[in-house]
Length: 122
Length: 175
Image 1: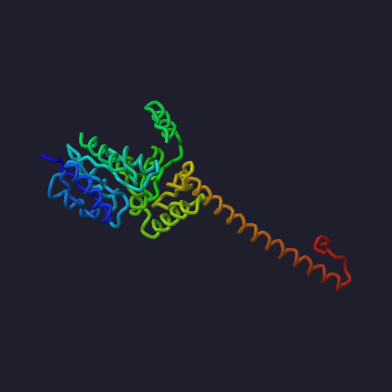
Image 2 (image 1 turned 180 degrees about the horizontal axis):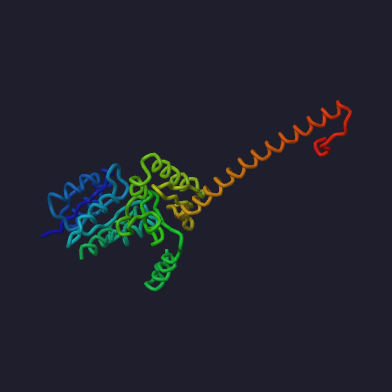
């Protein structure tokens, strides 16, 4: 059974591009255009990985991470951040404070993204 | 950015933990990335419940919306325009001096803000006591001076009257 990945990205073209890359590699993908929709999707169906943008209007990626952390699940959903924010302080926040699996900065290479998705799903 | 090994990380953490002033690092959205125990104590916030949250959101119940907005605007200006912001946080029964400087990483623009906090409640109280004592001293000084002036005027008047009577003056010091 293919792994299900939720792509959370407010830019429609970027969202579609990521979805296409993952679909072609055999993943089952879901999409959300913002943090609020992401949380709604997660409340309805399980996913194996969330690919999350940070800078989004209204409910941003940090808020999604806070919400996920507050759920304090025994089996937290793995998150990969995919963002234009390349500052060390943000990487520190994502990786150390929120414990995300990976932090990928845009622009990304297709093969690199697929390799890191596969690793995050291990 | 070179990776820190466990030993280096523990070393820097112990340095941060030993600083008696509160120190916090915030990212460009003012989300707390790290804080030391002194900051925890000065702000009255638990570290576990604060890291990962925007500082203005945590301080709003303590400072009120207006002061929080002012702080947020100040921090964002310090970040954008790269200057050191000095500010006083007025909590119920406590005053905290805050200095915020932009966190500038090599070859990059400012990526966050570093805050240094100091509880100055006792210092402010001492300053207030000194100010009250100084006011009291000034008041007494004024009263004494008025009395002296009045006495001097009376002496001068007595001298004037004696002079009219062609008698020697009694208070040469008042001349």
